[in-house]
Length: 112
Ligand code: SF4
Ligand code: SF4
Image (tube, rainbow, N blue to C red; front, side):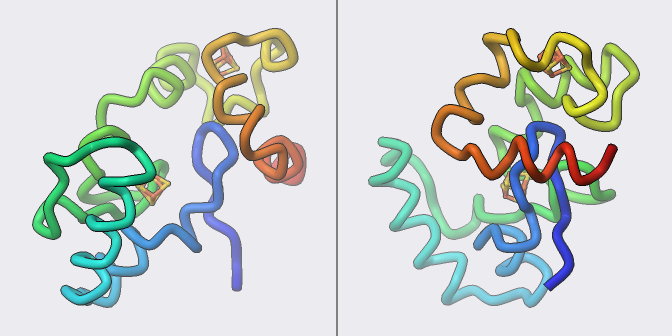
């Protein structure tokens, strides 16, 4: 499957929120909300909130992704992704993602 790389390097193509949105799958929305409630300690999440077309794609964004500090920073600096930023190696904003998902760094490098 083709990757759809977010500003921080995550692969939106395999994100359950995007898959549920693109296929308009309410069962997957429900299951994703239940999973993310636990994973992100976010009891307020509901199936209706699981809608996202992807970080850099046109269309609806999942709540956090619409106000994401990383996404906003890259946009403000005029970069498509953090992979174009000279500060990436030392950036404390994006490091939170890269620490847990090292594959995101490879994804960004593959775009350069
Ligand atoms: S931007 Fe949307 S599709 Fe990409 S990781 Fe975030 S919630 Fe998933
Ligand atoms: S400063 Fe950090 S978050 Fe901002 S564009 Fe550069 S790497 Fe991304």
